[in-house]
Image (cartoon, rainbow, N blue to C red):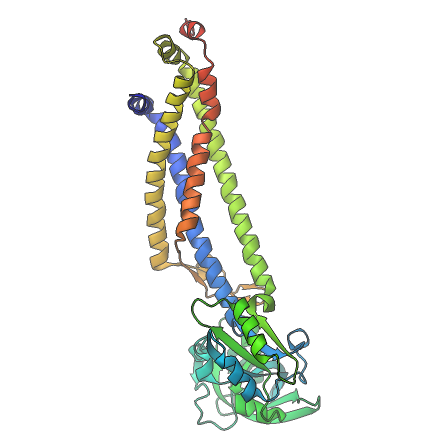
Length: 413
């Protein structure tokens, strides 16, 4: 009977009920959509960070990541790569020769970061050939091939087939020069990368600086379900007995700024949602309190008929519980519809006018954010909304329970 009376009471003041229900439903729907977008966006940002770092785990000579010195290389690279590939959980091994130097043509000289890679090995992480806008990308048929960023090509004034001279330091610290032929042009969409990025094969890069069987870096891609941090530990153990100092870094340690950014952004997201709900809940509490003051005579009559104290409070809490169920039902429907829309079409970062955006040096301009559901997180968020909304009516219910029937009956007389 109490719940039946509570339901009827809600619709005796239809306007007030609709306003409060809409406020809770909208806030709840925004929370669900926000969680879905944040979870997917952060996951994609971290994946992009791992790709930009060169892999989920990086193997190189000790201190190379901090200094990028040309003499810090991986010796007996084939043996090291073999051991890395044999570790359980390793999906792909990507050998690289990384050279920082100058590229020159008759038109000028510019700084460049030359990456000697095996294109087939790089494909599981990221296929650079997808950014190709002219020529070919290291097909294996070219002699001393080099692929340059579009803006670098413009600054050097060189065309396909043109000669490009690389000046860099070899493993002994001696300056050396090597001739390459331009076979392709890439455009990443990031100005800074297009002005400095260059690719060649591992063999051509080794020959340019006399590296023989050495490598600068080995990138590792983890298999599904394998944690990069745990995998890094397993790889380090597999390489521990080798007669050289090697450093094994999970991408989280290689790019800590991105991890910190996502954690900070996540924290701000929670603070933002907390502020929204505080405003909504205080509004609900205030509305219920005003409703109690408007219904003093009615509540006094109920008390005089035998519905006293705690039962009056229970009636108001029942009204709040029914309104909460109704609001959350509507809010879940709206939020889930928003999730499905975002999961289907996505939200491009570029659509906000951010054609070039970098975070910790990582290009985010082409990032498209979708939405994903994490059931436990949605359940906990929903439970928090339900508890907080019902809690907002505790004080008004307590006030109603304290009304004296005799005084209430004389109210407005």
